[in-house]
Image (cartoon, rainbow, N blue to C red):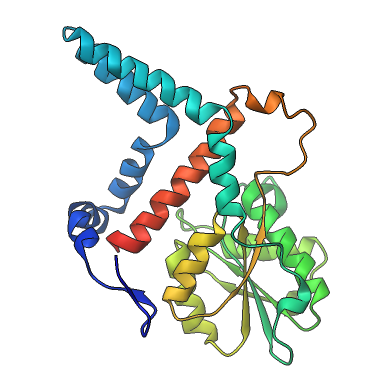
Length: 279
């Protein structure tokens, strides 16, 4: 896919034609896009391969090959080094943000991207946030306290029509000691692309924008915000891969944690493919 240096956007090419059917499915039914992505997740793909092996049992050679591929796939996604290398590659694209990275003399907007929540009135706001959302908010609050005069902007909608992600993040920030006067919200965005376009619509492009999101999600987020003709500074958090391990040898053993890590990797790569080729 060619890149247009004048517009900062990718030119139409064969890739878009190749992915046209999937793009059409996503426009007709957004849930269908999610279902397709789920099929490429580690365990669903493993079971699909096993199912294919069972269905083709009469063709012994093909069935054995499919079972072998399934076994190799399961080991690959559940043990190092593949999940760690792929996740580390995404997370390593942007370093931890330092307060001095922001432009001097400009208003600073710290935009905390939505990361999921639930609505349960029996729980305080912080307990209704997902771990990803709570980690992003904590980083946003940390930076706000280090950058005098900066504004914290929370983002995200509610699929249930109840309390939005942006409101839940704002409530939690206040519970954790933030001044409500330093908080703004954008309650409409349903995904990262919409967060970029809604920010530009509501706040313009004159302030120094800082994106706060999970490190593994940051490359896709930066791409989408630049596509919206914004020039943000990255503030990654929630790192999955840690440099220091208590026992590096145990790191090679298969684990559910590695499968979860691989799910995040596949989600981000599929999201980037969709952003570049299918939208």
